[in-house]
Amino acid sequence: MEEKQMIKTSKRLSRHLRHAPGEIGLTLDSAGWVEVSALLSALGAHGRALTRPELDEVVARNNKRRFEFDATGTRIRASQGHSVDVDLEYRASTPPDLLYHGTVGVALPGIHAKGLKPMRRHDVHLSADLETAVKVGTRRGKPVVLTVDAAAMHRDGHVFRVSTNGVWLVAAVPPEYLSGL
Ligand code: HQG
Image 1 (cartoon, helix red, strand yellow):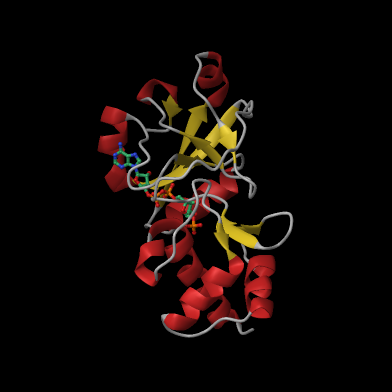
Image 2 (spheres, protein in one colour; image 1 turned 30 degrees about the horizontal axis):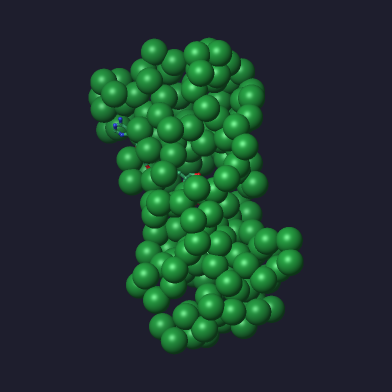
């Protein structure tokens, strides 16, 4: 599949597997899974059809491994990034001592006042490496990278989880754990 088509399809999958399943008549289960056959027929009924081999290619080649199949390959979900209410059932894990969050200057006053909030998503997204945080910030403009004292948060009882595709998830980051503001 052409790169352009891959990106378009990935965005379409993100939309329906993270934010708006109902728009194409899909229902996700409580952990975000949907039958592959249901997804393919819903996509076909609402725009360009996608074949199973095409879906496999988009999942395998996706630059952020955004989607995953279950062990039997009959169900699919987004690994993180949802705005719909799901419990992805990731186990709580010990984070690296430092985690990073990429944002932009315009968000800083709000973050300074309230810390990092999940905003329209389910969790705050953090990365273990600086480079990813720079990329995340760059989506919105000139990137600002904040450093999260994840060791202290963990010690204080905040629960961290890591998604299948390596994104660190936490409900919120109070301002006292942030530097770089
Ligand atoms: C900001 C993409 C004001 C926050 C990326 C961010 C990531 C606040 C924006 C993933 C705030 C939310 C997630 C506060 C947070 N006041 N602004 N108190 N707290 N913010 O898109 O982390 O391509 O929901 O800094 O690469 O940017 O979709 O989160 O700028 O991995 O797979 O509010 O989405 O991945 O924006 O991005 P988002 P994010 P995908």
